[in-house]
Picture 1: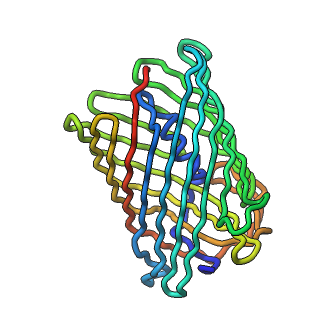
Picture 2 (picture 1 turned 90 degrees about the horizontal axis):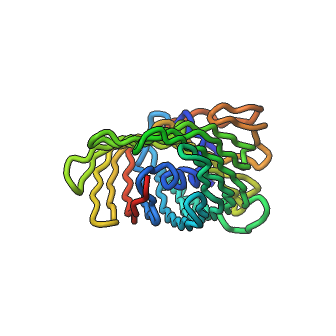
Amino acid sequence: MLGRELSWSRGSGFLSGLFILLFQVLVAQDYVDVARLEYEHGSRNRVDGRTSDIRFSEVALDLNLPLVVNDRLAIVTGVLAEVTSVANAVVDTTVVVHGHAFKAGFNHKHSQKWSGTYLLLPKVSSDLESVGGRDIQIGVLALLKYGHRPGKNFRFGVYANDELSGPLVVPIIGYYGIHGRWELNAALPINADVNYRFLNRLRIGAQFKGIYKSYDLESFQPAYLEKVNNELGAYLQMHVDNWNFRLLAGHSIARKIREFSADDQLDFAISAVRFGDRPEPPPSTQDGILFRLAVIYRIPTDN
């Protein structure tokens, strides 16, 4: 294995990668990302003051198909496929894990200003060496939207998932607004995006993501891989008709990638606050530069 301490930084961002990509669809006010293909690569990092040869890369494909039933009800469906690779050149070891998910639920307009999105989020999260019960995780999402003005709204909700480290609950508060050429899209403590349209087809922006993922490992021993990742970066985005192309450069903030025994679990966690005793590897930072390339097919929606 890569060693029990694979940390890529201290700190936390306690949200599954499934929810991060899904939230990009649900939070957007004036558009839906029907398809999104992303590639991310983390550069060589430093561990305890030494240069490390651990590298991280991830490919993700997110597909969403909202089906409108009437003016108050829409069915929300979709799939997400992720492949994450963590390589350690020093010990010549590479771990490849997968996260494949299905999204099923609905969006209901409760009143003129209030609407809600309710989703079931089952996924397979493991190295796929031997798929069993531990590889399957079940998540749920309930998100209310209050649209107090055109082009501006607030969100309140909760996400829960049975992570391999223990039950996880994440309260959500968010805001979306367009102010002239500025667009603000925040879903705390998950992500935040602010961008400025300076030409018809070009935007510049800054983005923060906090991610938590856990994967069952059967290829080595009964264990699981935990990835806690916070990322901050600046990006340039260009759109051509419905296609959007984004290049982001940034840096990790508090990134950890670690292996735990299957029995090493927390009682539960509320966002980044953890309850229960779990053996922790010695702290070690592995923050570094990251690059992300995204191709997005986006369609406009009514406010």
